[in-house]
Structures are given as C-alpha cells and as structure tokens.
Length: 530
Image (cartoon, rainbow, N blue to C red; front, side, top):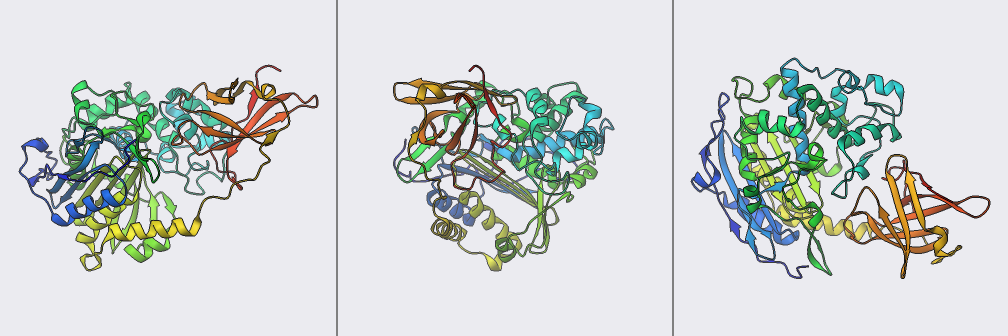
C-alpha cells in the first residue's frame, strides 16, 4: 500500500521525427535516438490528470501530418522505487489489443486465405453457439463486430481475474453454454471471448500460433518491439506496475495483472504489451498510405473494412454536447464516431490497473495514444480531450481535468452506493452442511470448505477467485473476495432437495436488483456428492 500521492514529474523522452509515414515507410529510430520536442499544453494536462485521478504514471504519443510531435512519459511506473515512466515503458494495451486481432484477420483476407463473410465453421468446425442456426450463419465479420446476441461481456469469467485457468480451446468450446440475450446481429454487445476465437481462427488458417503471426506480420514490419506472446527478460526492465487507489488505503499494486513476461490466454482480447514509443509507429502506419508497398502489413482496402460501421451504438447526451457527435458505431476492432464534423476512429482499453486509449482522425492526419497504470478513466479522458480539442476545435478548449473531476463528483453524489439486499445474517443449516465440491458444466469446480472462521470459497480454474462466505439469510451467503479488486461481492444461493440436503447453488451480484446481464447468469453448480 502507498498512502500518499507522489509528486509527478514529466520524464519526457520527447521527439520530433518524421516517421516516414509516406508510401509505406516505417520509423527505424528508437525513442532514445530522437530529438526532444514537447507541446506544453499536453504536458500540463497529463501531469494534472495524474494528480487529480490518482494515477501513478502515463505515456503519451501524438502524431500529426506525418510527424511525431509529442512523445512523453510522466510520473512513475513503480511507486516503491520511484522508477519513472519513459516513452519506452511497457503497458498493457487492454482492449486496444483488439485492433491488432482484427488486423491479423485482415492480412489473411488480403492474401485470399479468408473472406470477411466466411462462415466461422469453415475454419473452426468445433465452433458452436447455443442456437444451431446462429452457429451455421456466424461469419468471421461477426466475430469482430460485437453483434453476437450474447449479453455484454458474456464468458468473461473464463478470462478474468488473471491468471486464467482456461485454455483458448476451452473458451471456444464453452461458447455453446452462453445464453443469448437478444437476437443475432440485433444489438451491440461487447465480447472478449469472440476476439479470442478470432485469433484462434487466424492461427488455424496461418498454421502458426497467433502471437507469432502478429509478431512476424505486424510488429516486425513496423519495427515495433511489442508483444502478444512471451517477453524477453531485457524488455522487463522497463514495465509499468498496475495500481488501484482508494481514499482510505491509498495506492495498491494489482500484482495479478503485472507484466511478468508470460503470455496471457486473453492476449487477442486485451493482453498485448507495448510502449507509447512503439505505438506511435502503429499510429503512423494507420494514417499513412497503407497498402502501397510490401512493407505495409494491411491494405488500405482492409483498413476501410475495419473502420466501416458494422454495429450501431448509442450516442450519449454528453458526446453530443462536447463533441457534436451524431453517430457512433463499432467496426472491426475499432469504434468510430463523428466529432466536430470529422470521423474519429478509436478504441479504449481497460484492465484493472491499466488504461489505454488509441485515437485516429484520418482526415486530419492526427493520431494519439494514451497509456497509464492507474484505474481511473478520468486521466485518459482528460488528456484525449485536450489533444483532440487542440486540433479539431481549439475555440472549445478548456480545463478537461477539472471538467471530468467535476463530472465524477456529480455522478458519485447522484447515484450513491448501489442498493444492497437486506438479510438476517443467519442461515438455516449448520455450516458443514453447505461445505462440499460443486461443479458447473463449463466453469468447472468450486470448493466450499469449512474453516475455523467459517466457510471459504475457491474456484478450481481461477486461482484468484477465492473468498469467505458471510451468512446472509435462509440458505444464502455473501461472498467476500480476499482481493476486492477481482470482482464485486456476490450472493451464493444454495439449493436443497426435499430431504433438506444441499444439492447445488447459483451465484448473482450482491445488489438489490442484479438483473439478467451479470457474469453468473449461465452457471449452475451441482454438488458432486450428497
């Protein structure tokens, strides 16, 4: 735990090079070889955001008109040693990784080995959704466009909290157990498991592991020292440690999400590791005349597919007010919207302790990436708005750090804590009657064990999903996780037969109205022995 906010200092390994973003060239120079340049407005916003939103460190890259006009590290990548963030510090990209997954598919489309509208079962015969018609009709495009009909984040329990005990093959197999919430292709619903599926489809068609394909076909041509798979020891010398923050306990490192060199099962959905320096090369490529030389990983035609609206998303009143937004949609690994009369292509990334945002404005030859090792999205929002307003609507520039701080304060005052159900604090059977091993057909086993202090909960597949059971009422308990960052508290409802023997249980979020979209909706745990 770190009780106090540190004083943030800009460690600006800042650059002004022409990255060679014309006719397929890529930058060869490392950040340490570049001359220093900064835009003071961006420095000020980043430093203020770190302090206001309790974020240890941040890196920012901005590309404009073929030039890298800003590349900087701020604050600290590791608090106990006060190690600084530099432009070459590695962060997890979280869901900004999805653009690379879509690009890996696009490469195979360019080569004629895939078509966006191929049926998934042509390449992954084992792929199966709950509805047979949906299984037969599901296309490669559907994997990437967030319109599966599943509930948002369905299947995420197989991914987080890291490390996952599920393999990618098991994730694909277990899709058949996820119950649709809406009709196929009817609504936007965010999915991580389908991006893992898309990466395995690439691996099958390319006849090599997906992380090797991405390294050889994207990272190497663009001279990006980024990793979708294992990292070499040398790269681990400059990595950001993820943090949470609370008003009572201060900063706490989230060790389970730390960058330790191991490949994540979820890499294609949110596990790529990269630096702002190397991400600037990705920005430069995407804004350049891609596809005109053999050095370009993806053709302009396929980028157009990735940046075309496939699934309509809602537009909030705030977006209309701040950015004059009229439409919002999901493409293939990217979101898009109009801001101040121009199309903006972007994607956020959120993982406990890491935040990312990648933004492109192709018509203005503008791109930026923000990476940080905190858990408050206000930090990235404030910096992104500062940069975008600087180029798209300078007359509307304001103190965005103050704006988002005020918005967060208003939401906190307006919503308050979620309403909690009320229990008696007592259960009807002896604690040992609830103890036992239970299993769900796709999530696996859960051990409920009696200890000196009560009952404990341990998942066999997800090692960090462990906690204690606090009596709630009747045959229900509140599950309090040992690590409060892994998940929200849950209610566990034990079920009995007519002989008053415990036969199984179901889980739901510990709120008064859990609804049907929660992560436990498709789980039914049955007792192994009575």
